[in-house]
Amino acid sequence: MLRKKLLFGCIVLSLIVSACGGIGGPRTVKIVATLPLEAVEGQGIAWTLVQAMKLALEEVNYKAGNLEVKIEVLSSAEAASGAGASPEKEKAHAEKAAADPEVMIYMGSLGSGGSKISIPILNRAGLAQISPTATYPGLTKPGFAAGEPGIYYPTGKRTFFRVCTTDDMQGPAAALWAKDLGFKRVYIVQQDDSFGQGLAQSFRQTAEANGMTIVGTGVVTQSQTTGLEKIVTDMAAQRPDLVYHAAFNTSATPLVRAMRAQEVKAQILGATLTESNIISELGADAEGVIAILSGIPTEQLGGDALAFIARYEKRYNTTLGPKSVWAILSYDAMRMALAAIGKAGKADRAAVLEALRKTQFDGLAGRWSFDENGDSRLLFVAGLQVKDGKWQSKGLLRVR
Image (spheres, rainbow, N blue to C red):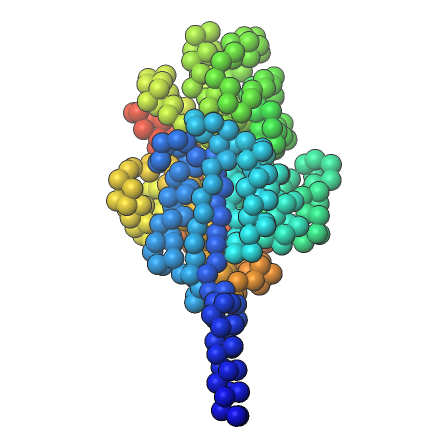
């Protein structure tokens, strides 16, 4: 009789263990990546990020410690062109991830506007979020808009992390570089969202504190490609020697064309120009254009980073060029996510969050961790210039 009871107990325990995926809970977890993907795979910055994440997973056989890891990639693109993210899709994807108990980490959003939507939803669910590219300072730091950053964290606890250098570092770096290059009169072309506002605000403050004059400001939308002549007419009247483009790369090429058409000779300095096709589209008119890059230029990377670039380019049959910085950030973001899941050792969101806060990570650009705000402690801003039809590094820039 005792033997039968023991046998029955073992069968019941076996069924329970099988149903739960083993003692200690499920052995499979999920990472969701939400980015505005172009219809053609491999085209655009969002695909660069996704492919880097997938490579990081492939290289560890989709495992983090003793856990199996699945990835679900969702497109938040407004349209097939991938020009901008849809707020409705950002919200729907975040809610879907929050409701799925398998999901331990949410990778995204690409932009700061999308992050403003997703952060509160994921925060209520206690779900860790890592963005490789959302740069608006107010997502994690006070002093940029009323109520920020607290309004994004209804639980009072931080769940959002990012590996990129924020705009309050990029803007000053651009302004100090402009001063070092001798520019004095600056016209700002600013995108009408948190990304453009954050960049323009931090650039303006540093520029004016260092004796430069902001002679005017023009406002563009996120995907604007037409109607820039009015801005350029105002620009021409102000006679700037530099135009600071605090906007996505979409408007960069048509802006330069409009400037050249009206014979505005001012130099252009942009925050996202290296992500555009400005060289192939403008040809000789792109010569001399300068840009900010939130990372380390390829020429100054160490052996591990260069080896990663070679693996990426072979795996996806492409050339990264200036996009290597975004690939590196995304690859390291995924590796940090896997390290945190492995350290937690179980499918538990609270444990993964705690591991993210405490993990010291050896990344391709150096050893780093997240600070109390959720920002990376490893910050780099570089300058580049188009010379002989190619982007060439001008080295790392000072940010203060």
